[in-house]
Length: 168
Ligand code: S3P
Image (cartoon, rainbow, N blue to C red):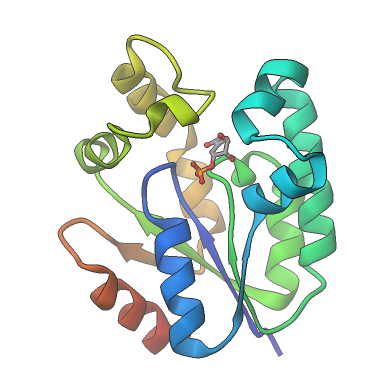
């Protein structure tokens, strides 16, 4: 039986915040893949990208997913690029249901306006354009991998967490 809840979605869709709340509500431990990568490397995600590049980061991400996908009864929040490697999702699906947090481009831009500088793929002058480009490239992948799609625009955390709990 699958007992994990896995949150996927673009940067700024609330995977970490909703994951934490979900973990409190369902009394399951919360795991955040970016946090585990940072802990393992003792470096911030943006520094890993700067120093070693994206390919290296994706390798770390895949290693962490290999480890955590064996666990049970967890709420797992993933990085926005987890869907880029099909093996990641294959692994996560073994013990978990995949919930896509889906949001409009405008909403994502609004949510990222104070934190885009911490996102190495957006750390540029025309970061809003980059959000649209990346979203267009990835949209299909998010939908392909989702067991459930949760629309998050104009909803508070309470509503989102309740929706996920009800479907799970
Ligand atoms: C990334 C998303 C980030 C982080 C890294 C790459 C991406 O996670 O893993 O900056 O490729 O979309 P969040 O989705 O938590 O911001």
